[in-house]
Amino acid sequence: MAFKKNRRPQANDPLASQVPAGYRPAFTPGSQGPGANNAFRNQAGASQYSRSNPQYSAQRSRKSAKGKKIALGVCCALIVALIGCGAAFAVWYNNVNSQLNTGGKTSEELENINEQLVSSNFNEPFYMMLIGSDKREGDDEGGARSDTNIVVRVDPTSNQATLVSIPRDTMIDIDGYGTNKFNAAYNYGGAAATIREATQLTGVSISHYAEVNFEELVSLVDAVGGVDVMVDERIDDTDADNTTDHPENPRIIIEAGEQHLNGEQALVFARSRAYVDGDFTRTANQRKLIQALVDKVLALPVTELPGVIQAAAKCVTTDMKVNDIISLAQQFKDDGDLLMYSAMLPSVTGYVDGVSYVFADEDKVTEMMKVVDQGGDPSGITGSTSKLAQKYGAGSSAGGSSTGGTATGSGMYAGNDYDTGGASAYSGGYSASGTGSSSYYGGATGGYADASSNAYGAGTGYSGAASTGGSAGSSGTGGYAAGAGTGGYATGTGVGSAY
Image (cartoon, rainbow, N blue to C red):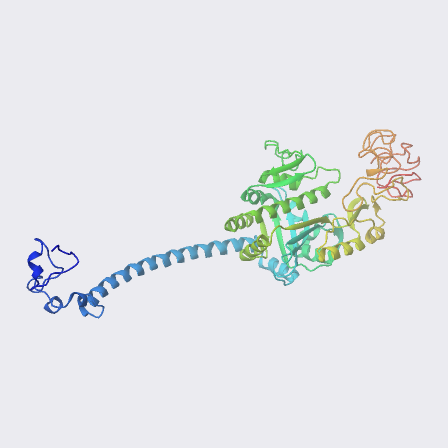
């Protein structure tokens, strides 16, 4: 009979004699020799490894205890690592928050700022004040005024933001200091005064603020990998790239068109005022830059936001915490593309006692902020008049039917966008003789300095000499002197143009 390997031969089994040589059963009583645990040896094979067997339980207990020690050690190591990371994060978080929330300000300054802010949450629209300063090395006065003032409506519920610039030369009445330009509020009362004046001018309550140092903006733009903006006009400005005072520095020239700007280029883009309308194009460019930065940040993975916030802390001071910024950014990222509107406060321009001002069109400001508050696009609302300008008898260049000038249409510097229009934009010529022969912006009347041209009305430029130049009449003394000729800052009976 063939041997079946799956059958174990018994002692008096006839098959026992057929067990192959070398076969050894799994257990043979007494085979473990003297001193072995007889009770354990004499047990059946199944009961030897029973969980109820004390001997087995003892062995299992020793192995289990060893495993627990290993597991406990691993857990302890993980906990220590997590605690270490948590401590490092806490240090980082506190440091960045300190930078963001103080920015070198005193406790009194911070308290004054908080008094101007109202409570809000991220589940409803709120207003935020952006304040920009551009203090440069060796320029003590530049840092005392706010070059950029933007009221922002942020609506997390509809993934929308609206930026409204307040021209820095806007005439306001500052408590205790009288008539001033808007940017002087920062000089007299810091960010708190700027927020207060913006609230009074626009009629909206502001919940948060951020103060940006443009000199340090370079690091933030570089931290997000640069920004993409549309440059409307070639920028070649030695003041903006700081080579006027430091000719040894490299020139930074930005061509017109869609451009990818690094930090240094973005700073020049935000600084330059080398435009016909000066500060007005600059404020538009600054809004473009802010929008480009926001778009770039929202496109970043959330894991990169802490690094960006750390870079922002070097150039931004705000009442918002790190977790607030990350939470808000994540909320906008989750809701899709951000819709942004951009506009300037409806205004007209003029002079009072030889000082140029921007005058808010009070009725249009009310109209604009109502549109903004409803989430609409305010960019089409422009200024045409101002009660304050009328009060001061300011010579305005808002165009239209000027009382002593020949301008028609919107005129240069008219309204919100300062679009060119009318017959005598910027009141005609700039330097040469003849009627508008060398016009600063192509005008109908005269020039700026020479004897046969009429500068801002009758007369000869700033010299005040009598002249028969241009079409502005013959008896005016010229210059910026007040007088009967209401077309400009010139006396006499000249026709003058609307400046």
